[in-house]
Length: 325
Image (spheres, rainbow, N blue to C red):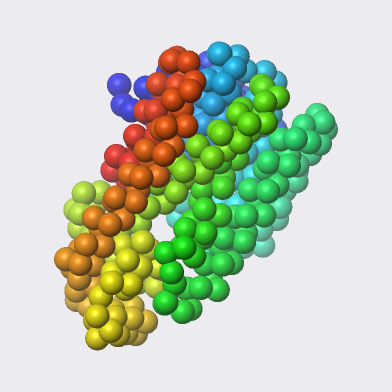
């Protein structure tokens, strides 16, 4: 049994029912929209976000979920899907999870409108059922994701980004949505604000570790047989690179910045940058930080009673660090 199936095991029935409810929450009277949402639903990814919602809810409540949990998971997935559709337009990307993106098949105008539609469906699902507390958690996440993306664009032009700014970007861009999943899962079943905050923090820490792992893929040969250097080509500032820029000599720094700014399409030069980052402790430093976030996340689960849901969450945290793609 692969690791995702193992994680899903304790919430298998909930995930089955969730898929049905999620599908229903997308329907519309417009045939074109239904065609597109059908395409989206049938090309789903690992579904990590709804899994976080259900596992958190079941762990904090001692094994129960309710209609609010299902609605919360649907809202998260609707809004997450909306942001992905919009992201593909922003990045002018033709593929998503190995399939054609919405904008590649139906053009940008339709993709933007579909993203807006999914966003409004998510908001209405909460409002129609009076889940204002859950809506607040999700709305904060959407605001932070937009801020994170814009902060990255603003800072990327200057390659002198500090580690703190990098953490702020990834906290908003990536971690905030996983934090929302965990906070929302807890909030759907319990009233204890301290516990909800505890779970939000747990999700945030995992999100940070998750993004650093993504940064490391750019330098690793495991996943694809050779380092890709895509982040370098796109002038994205990742943790291994930031660390090396902040610790190398002024001369080396000048060469690095020049390489990234002016020679990022030169394969040989990109290879040299990858080698330089590796040889100057960039990867080891980032791995170390990733493990720190992971350990801090795990420590937040210590006070919960042992259960299959807690075990699955621990498995999920370790999977984030150990995944191969």
